[in-house]
Length: 282
Image (cartoon, rainbow, N blue to C red):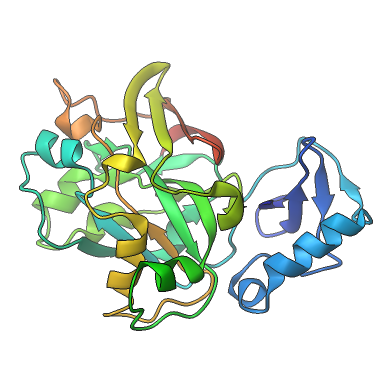
């Protein structure tokens, strides 16, 4: 099942995308797609309402917002693809490299992304996002990790490399600028995705292919990441985990072609939909 939120910024309503592409209003089931919805078996309730065939249809062409409203936290894993670590000159990490991203960076998949004032090294990163569906602490392995995952989404972990790598020993400055995490278009439920380590990731800039990776190349797979994080923090329904990016970022390319105002980035993950953003100056 594909869950999403549509409407003007701040006025999004919950919806489900039917197999034939129609958008159906979920307002009779929930007021929003958020942590409370996921924690209260909202996915099962939405699935039952869809099966009953009584959900009203929404018009096409509405703005698509982030498929998850107000994530409590956005946890990120860096250097999680061997080819990406190699292109940046970093060693293969023995444990996941974990950092946090300001949840307010999360915007819709087609919303405008702002290049920060003073930025000269704004970069792109297509990533598989994991959305937590059940509270998780001290999980004891992969099976337990799978059980707490509500679903997956396309995530764009936009990064400012000078802020990230040169201004601080922490990465937060270069990761938490406004609009720096487009998410969606859909939250695709775990049962529909199936095997998360068998998905292609793709990204192009101004029509030029830059990233073409595969989740099977992750150093630490999804199950390991979720179980690992649960040893150090409580994961709550609606939390988002960005699981890393493959090779092809501007930082590792000849000439380091960082993003400029007017550039357009398109990205997608197999089965999870696509995004398109135009970048503008903050």
